Length: 286
Length: 112
Image (cartoon, rainbow over all chains, first blue to last red; front, side):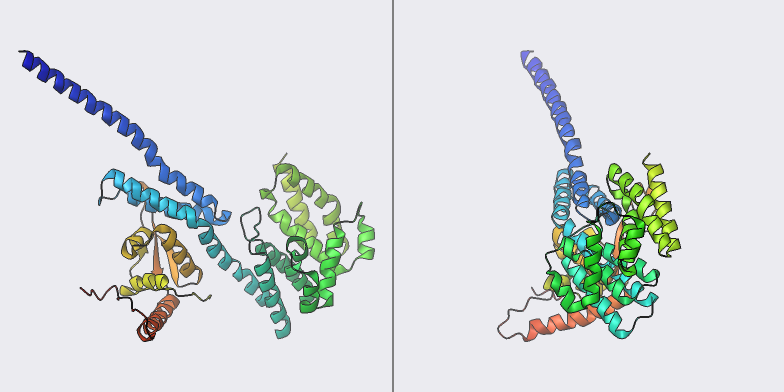
């Protein structure tokens, strides 16, 4: 009789033990199951912003396949999934850079095909792009794009305004002095005195205190003002990635200074575009 | 189109695509076929995609009915097919004719 009781007690204890163990492992597993997905989310953030959704969707779908596969036991699959995610965490920065550098090549060819430049001018613009891409290569816009996409966009705006190759070239190179250690006299030696002068004068505009539109128009070359305005236009086009207070400040400045300046020197469409962007930003951040 | 530096690892990936050029391959399947971890395979895929040798497409599946997210698969482009054939010939010759080199066995050859 006591042997039977002992057997029953042992069985009951065994069952309770199994249930407890199951509850514990299940709790452990549901937490652990989330680990690789979390690692992938972190990995994706290391890639430039425009690529993130696509990379996340691709990697999550593969992870899903690994975790739900049939070739191994659940914990083994979880281990494989975690290793998969950690490998991506290690390499997502490289992957992002590889993929985003190609998308930056296209705007340049669009820039070259859009206007009629001589062979020498095209060659100069290609060299300028290469210099900018090389020297800005570890720099990123707040949007997550490589910084060179900004200088290409500025060059594109200048080309659309009908500016000459010298001015477009200065657009491609305009952020070198303020953002890189590249000696400024190298631009002078490689791209000529005009390009170097435009860049120097654009940077000098930043230190003008209490700028007035009339004074700016009278004292500054038109190509310098065009570059300043193109720079501002692209910054306004990508303003959503800035802090709200900065967005409002830049928008107000655009409204009272840059838009009217564009109008004064005959860039009517640019004026309209600047005004639209500034007003919609001020409304959106109200 | 950019140039791709075809390392042995890149060649291994290309060889798998060339075994059946129209077949689309998933990232995880390629990891299993090559034995490479994700941290090694995906940068290679990115380089080949950036160079225009591979194209990436979304799998034709409705996530709602399938109960899982749609996967991405990779396929050789026309340019990629030509380039991959050319590069593999070059790599094979390098391996074969390098004096004193220890030739890596061809994965498909099955030398036992």
